[in-house]
Length: 208
Length: 208
Image (cartoon, rainbow over all chains, first blue to last red):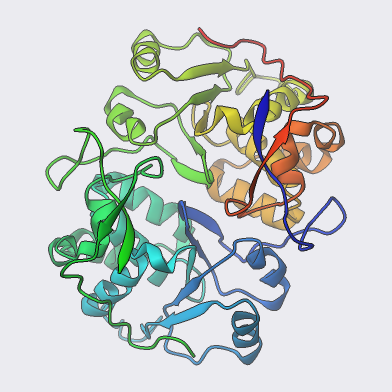
């Protein structure tokens, strides 16, 4: 009898000795999609086990040099979408920027992908919330997930943003077909299609 | 140019019309591992998109008839481990039972798998916490994840249980090799091995 098992093909192995420190507020969103707070150097060991191909970074501040070096060393592409965090008065979440980030997010060529902002709560939560709407999750499930990740810091205006977000234009993007046609748990059904009329994602910044 | 995309191969499709209601406290733990509160009939549509092969149910109460019918209709195997919930005085988490559940959980032949108890907070949280220890997550990351899912209902004794839980015996179980050797994000490295000296999991109850 045979078993399909997972085994390391390289030396980058944790075998009981070391421990892996996840970034704050880390969790798995989907097969190939992760979310977290801002990764620190002590999280790089953990991140390297994810085999990331891309990172979506949702803050306007420049990416730290040590993080850029980690990305270079691991051949990870950076998509930066500069969304303002806490401001007084509050800056509305820019829906066109979120839509651009969503286009990058649903493109499986960018997976495995990590989404992060600073705390992994508000900007990241809004982007994931919009993804869930594309996936046809009911609104109460979307908001519950947002609140679970934001904890006591949840913001009513983020919930309003997610509820009002219109995913129609994304639904016309061929790259999103894996979500549009099979909201969740799609991994057993993979088809290869010719690329036709693909709307290429236009991130504000790509490889650094 | 070709794109690998996801598309539905059957009629079980959500295409903008219907919405999918996730069970309460639902989230993805790992590729092929999910967790939640007790699924209700209104969540069956969502669950069917996960292509589940198994469910780990952590309560002693009998599984509801309508849930059993859903499992039968979708060919989902039920592993029940009867762990007491809230009692006065509190019942200690039974470590041997958690270990048995863990053996089922790390066996990829049971994936995709959903873990649930009643609220998806304490019993489920302890099992997932022990899984993270097997995966070499550092304790602070494990406890953060537990607390995020338990919210204000988190229990100090659960944190103590997770911290004290000894994963050594599981590490000697060949079925857990995918976690032991590649703590996370292992999906790109699949090898087929001969099954040798496998300790077969012994759930307290299996198919109902």
